[in-house]
Length: 148
Image 1 (cartoon, rainbow, N blue to C red):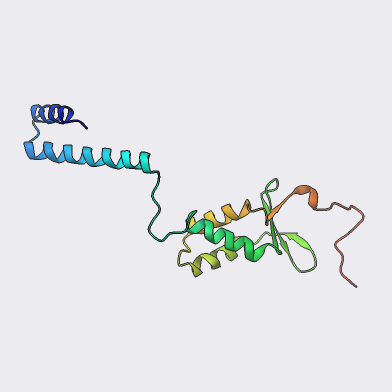
Image 2 (cartoon, rainbow, N blue to C red):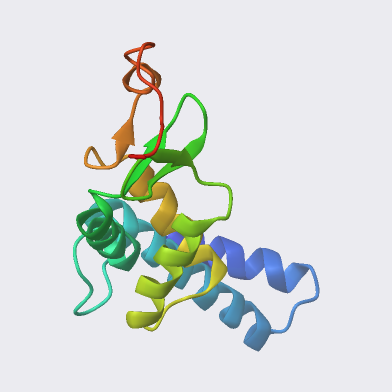
């Protein structure tokens, strides 16, 4: 805000019956907001000190994918998690992926619902966990039967 603009604003506020003190406070707040907006535009978003690139949610989602690359898949077309029992894949209907993500979030001291949802959302897109509809039942002659 230029000095001419500031003087004009002060005069307008005072004409509207605002005291000089209130007018200066409003001008100070406006300048502060303008400075923050300008800094955000030129510097981009600021990371918190010592925070990992991508944020905590991204780091936990990467750890989640690393830990569960062998036993979980997310099929986006079905909006379903698939779990490996050790013998076969099954549709996971018990929110197991959320529970596993929540445990990891607790280890990072941030297990609120927003963080757990963010972690599972990010993990769904990890290539190690991504599944496609065509990979299931690719051989119609095979059945999920036990070794009896």
